[in-house]
Length: 206
View 1: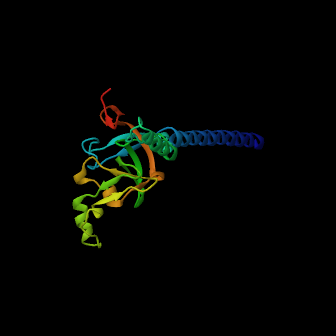
View 2: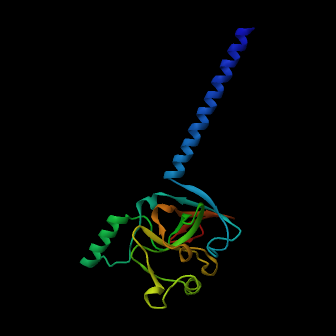
View 3: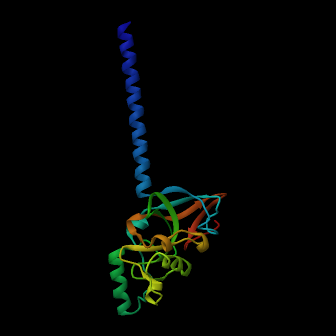
């Protein structure tokens, strides 16, 4: 009787151990897939209207492009000067993200939250400050009303992000340039009522 109980306990323990190991393997596999291949995130709100519905959509994003860095296609690669600049940029930033891409990022001043925005500025770009935001900032900071104060230069290893709904978006106009390590992934598709892949920063019908 005692031996039978002992055998049953050993069998239950082995089953529990196998189940635990299987659960751990599945969890590790899912984490590796999420970190290196693709992840999914729910996006909602009005900041990305009309690209993303305010009612919400599931965004699929991949981290590979972010890890590669930035791709700068502004400079003319037909001239020696343009080739030199382009080579230097690719050496520093890789060939992953382009201007106009949709990305998921950690909010700089709220690390527990993520955002979906569009990349509009690269390191070295001079961005025109939002006139309304600049006017509000002047009330609290000593900012002169000259040509230089109306622009901000994106620093190295940062990007400038904005929402598509500029009148109702909290983005780089509020919290400034976003550091590259805060980018979680480049959006390649969304799912709401149907599945839509991204092409050149725009969701297209299949």
